[in-house]
Image 1 (cartoon, helix red, strand yellow):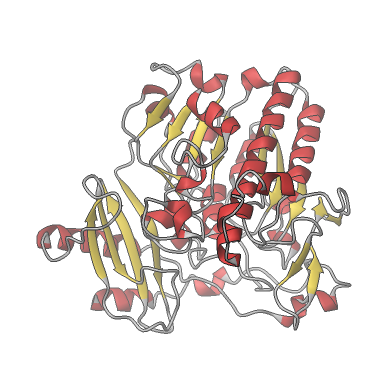
Image 2: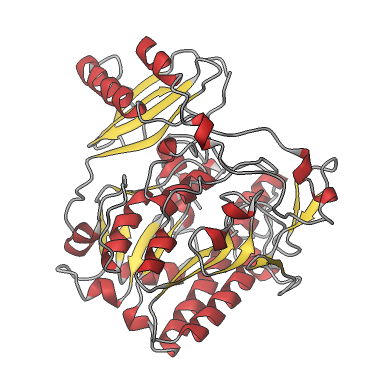
Length: 467
């Protein structure tokens, strides 16, 4: 979902539930994620920038033998230490080729959802191309599940979440992550939602129809399901003690859905990383010094949920994190303690291609590749400097005007890049193809531990010295 996919940023969108929740809580207008899905999820789970965990190079592609390093503490795992039951509904996408990568091994007590990148919203079939074939991808725990066969994905995840809420009770605190698979392709939605955006008499190309009708309908379907989840919280009496957080994992692949921001999913421009987000619920409003309905301009990154939620749960955090506790900022309407942020840092250890995108206060540096990072792509020395306070849409490149500021930002980027861990994005491994697993996406065809070798490699430091 992009910045313009919610009604408070775009009146053409029909998201009344989200807007009501957001406006009775705090809208996080300067909320940032990573440019792609798996890096954002890794940042949420670990509280670390993905470039420090080898997870920075885009999403974990289909049938690639990799996953989130297993030695890293995770948010659900640490919450479990504080007595919470922990549950994941929907998308995982942090590796499944070994069971050690899967949700039940990474801090979740229960899991109902999909291991991989994306499946058909009705059939749960994950198909990349006709040569690899299709694989079924739905699990309850570690077992294949056919629950909700033929049901639209958003409704499936909603029903599971409602069931979880009903079954939890109040004896033990709980954490539920509902990782919806919409509005990710394939673009599918029940017709009554697409009709909300269809304009009779207009001629659509396929691209326009997917973007302006189906995809937007997918967002409104999410909105409706959220309403029923909140209603269940209220019906069970647990709403008053529940904190609700909403965010996208990255910008939309359609530029218009990120308007007026520049860029799209995969890029380090604002449209790829600045996304809709809000926080809601009595545990928030009971501690606010301002009236609910606040729009916060505090700089917030997805890693910030890690220390914030753990502290609220009573955890004495000793784990290293790049996150900043945002509770004081969102309850007071003040500034965040965060003054800097990494959009992405990636350097290829096989070629001299790189991407350094960082922010300090309102200054943003993009050095190297601007689109989704690709190793061996011809590098032409791209270098941009923006002052987002004056230019939030990145229209005025100040690299040749503010020379001293540019040099300071380059030095900051180089300093941060010293902590980089080389990305591990291996090629597809045919042993993972569904044809060898009874038509399923399932673990058992790789071994973790690649970090023991890869993290000893510091070849990127040689490139840093050349920059």
